[in-house]
Image 1 (cartoon, rainbow, N blue to C red):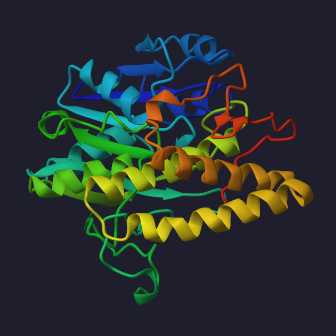
Image 2: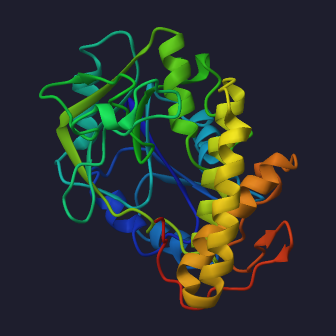
Image 3: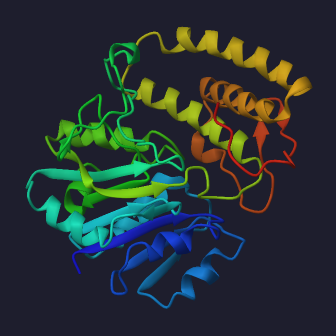
Length: 319
């Protein structure tokens, strides 16, 4: 086999079996990097009786660090990194990826078309390092026909990435300081600096359920905390100007919204509380890897103390 599949997961029992079965292969080596699941995820995976290796991390490593660990264990030329809430719609996706990537010797990483539950395309978002203003593009999610070399206005997310393993290691993989979010943008940026192409193959398509990868306490709070922390971290990493001045305004806005929604809308309270605490934590020098969620216990803790559990949460609120 030329490809190893790597799937980081935590409490992914609802989606991971469909993800693996959509690969349509009984021989492909699959590495599951488990970040501390306490549900039936691993039992369901091992019951499939496939070529699966499970790596159990001693802590919640997050997405990028778990991916680093899994890809380090891959003994193949390529690695396909997946979120567990991916379900391929194209048959034999790995064969397709292998055939396509060989047409471009300088590819560092590739992806395909992902669609959300409404069947809308997800690719093409503006990255943190883009110099293009969002309002200058007619459709920031538009993907040109044919294989597409991703530019600053056409970059894919991390739900599906097909790697040339040597090139992945040549840029030192994902940033180890990041727990979750934007690490794929950062890797894409570093691949470009090494003159490796990042390509989207539109002939391969997959359904991305989004926010169904994990079930952990206070998921909305945690995801918004890490989104803001990562956004600030990578902007500082690449010396973006006005980073703190711009976010002083956001912190004021999030503080106001956190106070208001605490009284009238608890779902949005967790969203803005997560963003506020993520920003303050970054400004006060807190590291992302020092504040990571557990699968079975609400350990969410903000600048001003513990965050109570959102008992009614069964999805991630992002806006």
